[in-house]
Amino acid sequence: NLNSTRWAVSPVPAATMFWKFDLHTTSHIDQLLDREDVTLRELMEEDDVLQECKAQNRRLLLFLSQDHCMQELVSLITTEPSAELEERSRFKFPNIACELLTSDVSIINDKLGADESLLEMLYRFLEQDPPLNPLLASFFSKTIGNLIARKTEQVITFLKKKEGFIGLVLKHIDASAMMDLLLRLISCVEPAPLRQEVLHWLNEERLVQRLTELIHTGKDEERQSNASQTLCDIIRLSRDQANQMQESVEADPLLAVLESQDSVAGLLKNMFDGERSEASIVNGTQVLPTERWRVSLPAEPTRAHQPPSLPPQKSAILTTVGVLEQPLGNARLHVARLVASLLQTNAPSMCQELCSLATMDLLLDLFFKYTWNNFLHFQVELCVAAILNHPSTEDDPHASIHNALVAHLFQKCRLVQRILDAWEENDKIQSDGGTRRGNMGHLTKIANMVVQNLEKGPVQAQIADLIKELPEDCRGRWESFVDETLREDEPRNTVELVSTHNMHSSSEDDDMESPFPNDLSLQQAFSDYQIQQMTANFVDQFGFKRRGKSRALLCQLIPVCVCVCVCVCVCRQANAAAFEACCKERIRQFDDAEEEEDIWEEKEINYATQAKSRTR
Image 1 (cartoon, rainbow, N blue to C red):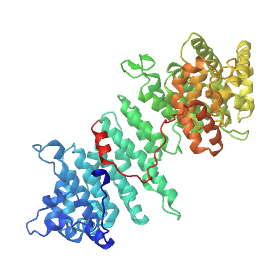
Image 2 (cartoon, one colour):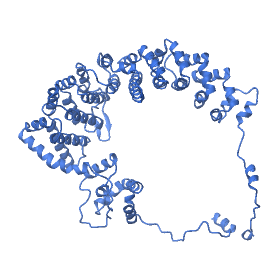
Image 3 (cartoon, rainbow, N blue to C red):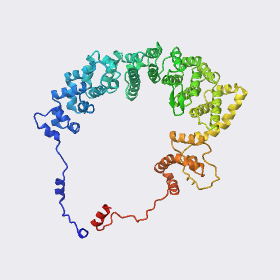
Image 4 (cartoon, rainbow, N blue to C red):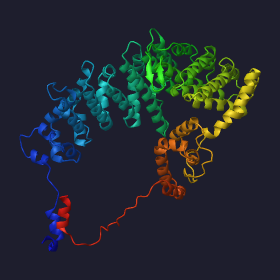
């Protein structure tokens, strides 16, 4: 009878169990290495070959560092595998070879960096006709990059002997791995004197100028994009290196060339001379805002002004808010970003040119035309902020130029009138049941910016005079708008989304005012929830006080409420009691009828009963 059976287990000494269940196993690689005829491919078939290599398996490392093995590894990462192989396994061995060569094991690094014949094999990969296989290019770049970091002097000396090295890298710049290789030469060379030597070598090779020449209408988009990104990264890395160096070091020659007037002028010439292309304008403007505008190029804004006024030849696109007949285009967006950067420099010649070209008037036209392009709205907001927040003094000889730009913004661009017209038009759309326009958030910020600078700002007196010059009806509309509309919207625009107050049950006072007076409140509050740090008034905005409408909105807000409840519980100890109270009030408790079983209680095992239950 199984019910009365008792199973007895004799005690086993601890030492016996330890040796009996010892999980230590000998690597199969060691067994393979015992064979005299073992091949590199056989070892690379083993799953743990890389692990054993990094674990400094001496027998394996001695085998891999043999001349014929190193040559085969380098050949694998630089030679296109046969097309007859199965696609998913074609690059299996090249990938393993790359991982072995870059495993950061000293014996492999020493062998690869000191053997010039191996370096020559690697270098011949660059001498192929484009395009390079992108996967092999990444293997090559990773291997050379590892050598630059670990065997710096040997590799730099080798590369400097190759007169066409930079030209070959730029020839294959359409492969992003070549861009990574250039950046490793700039950022991974130590110590500082050797790095400075490398920078001077790259400068003598005219690296910056040759990259700039690639941002041209006649070049394919991939090459332009990678050249632009390389220039941006050179600027970023050079400045980071300069900031990190505590001691006084020589100026970075590449950065000095990039920030020179000739470099900026050459880049703008490539962007705008001859037949223009969106790719050259976009990639060129990505570089320009990253430079320190220490030079004035008063003639260049004329060129930059034309792309915003000439819409791209693009077909209509379907968006979530309808069909967009004439898209803004990437080029016009990047030029708007460039104008914002120019205004932040406060260069008098730039301000004068932008004013004479009515650039801000054009940008505001685009702002109100493309009501759902928040990327554009943000750049226009930056432009307005740069104009209104520019500090000026009576002693400033260029104050008159900046004052002219402020006047241009209010008079020629009619900023106040446009704000009022757009706001009234949006109110009409919403009253007819439409959706709040997508640029209203940025428009609110711009309006508040004007009000704040009117109350206290560097051009306070001038703005006050410009407001007084408005037509009487417009001035009255503006005053009402500031005193009523903006003040009413201020609490909602600065809403704090978490509160320590308990949420009210939907069964409470039905006559209390609904927290959702209209769709605008819900949309604005939810938008703020997405972009703001959760703070103190969330419950006041999302509390449920009435049946009917608030219950209909419950389904929309369930994910928000759950997320906020979790955040309140975890992040704010002070809200623990409120959270618990809300949970008890809203979440139905699941009470099990049966008493919970104590899993630690000793009981007799009835195998017959268990067997019977399994057969049901």
